[in-house]
Image (tube, rainbow, N blue to C red; front, side):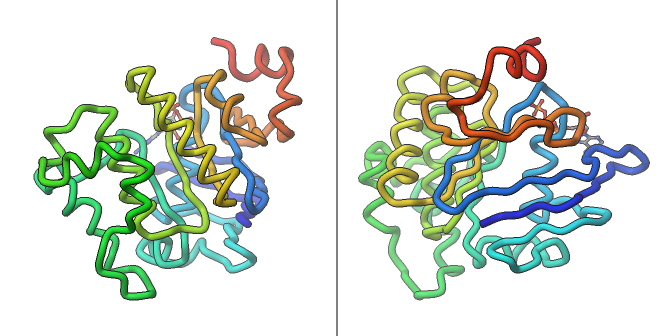
Length: 231
Ligand SMILES: Nc1ncnc2c1ncn2[C@@H]1O[C@H](COP(=O)(O)OP(=O)(O)OP(=O)(O)O)[C@@H](O)[C@H]1O
């Protein structure tokens, strides 16, 4: 579904991603894990075209993405929920959700009802400003906004950071439903091991800008956790 081949990325003179290779299977839920600062967010931003890669390939269903502008990602079928959510605080919930509609190829003008089935709180708060929502509600809005495009792949960067446990549970339920029942491919940067084990089928461990271990989540051993995740 998404293949990343030998990607190198730099901030100025500092190299962050080193010949990084990653393969995401269609219909899988893959957790990208690793300690703080190893390059997980940088990797997602490269996939989204928000950061340039020096060399290497990023393929979506075999099509190269790495030289295409960021605006190409959403119409190509990639939904993105960035770290820190990044909703529009002065726009209403409804306006936030409608932002992506013009990109839809089918010309749909209305927010799909499914968004409100997944996140009923968004329907109750349609006219509320995004910035007035709680952190958890903003996260649900950010996920809802990405889903309005009915993407093929949903990429989430630490969706549970700073979120209260009952909303974390709900976000987990939504990810499982989208992935297991609807076959949506999910890529998730996740630090919380319990959450990663609950929703993830596959893991990729990142260390110093490289993927150092890839396997099924069932095979995430105590040894790997000690080596690459424990602080
Ligand atoms: N805009 C930037 N300019 C320079 N260096 C940066 C920039 N953004 C990130 N970095 C550095 O790149 C490295 C990787 O950062 P990145 O945010 O990708 O890590 P991460 O694995 O997502 O960490 P975290 O779990 O803390 O979010 C870090 O050393 C970070 O300090």
